[in-house]
Length: 294
Image 1 (tube, helix red, strand yellow):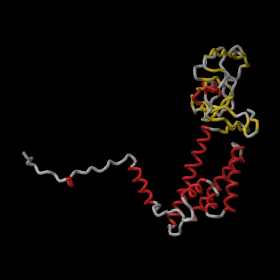
Image 2 (cartoon, one colour):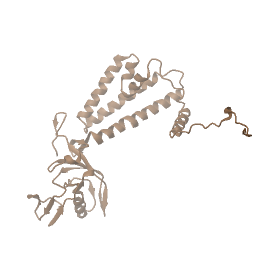
Image 3 (cartoon, rainbow, N blue to C red):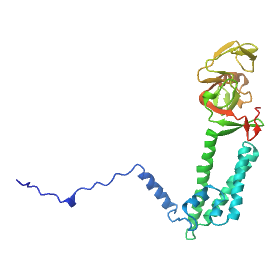
Image 4 (cartoon, rainbow, N blue to C red):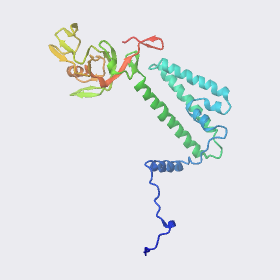
């Protein structure tokens, strides 16, 4: 027996459009900003392809080479690399700050030349917008993240008085032994009217987790070795260093403000350094220079 219901033609089948991806809103927002800033009219210069153009953005001076002015671009690249070398060798000193200024200046000059080669049909407003956007992008997306990445994972300069010590950042805590000199982070804290500014500490690991420290009137003893008692140390007490901590007596030149009578408890609290606050150990040599702790 035939079905009395009319059959639905195949052309009338329902259609379900694909679901929007999670990043669709991001694309829509980026497109809206591009239209608002008049960046949709921008095209690469005809003389250069995408690869060299990207390298011209990242390497100061290469923009001149990409457009045939090698007699300008090559000395600029050499000057930039020289500034990088000076910055690395004398990091933490005034000459390194000047070298960083030279690096940024060369980058800005190269970018401005690259932007000047843009097609003439681009409006002045778009060129100005592109210039500011590029300069901000280079500073915020290249130099600043690179600096933070280097200081967190490679090396960090620390100034102690008139001395500069370059620390091997990212040193694993398990490699630290007694008598090692370490740099560690200090969080800002306040106890009563005593305030300690945030910064870095530098000191020698005198005891590790599980060691017992005996503080006497004139000396303190660790593992049978006695040393002269230092200012603000406890008197007639015994400490057990907790696990995952080191005993590092803090430098008395720290930036602590407030009543001197209340400084002692804070220094004693700082003496037990958690492994999580480790920055690293200073290099013995930095580009051939022996690093002598202050």
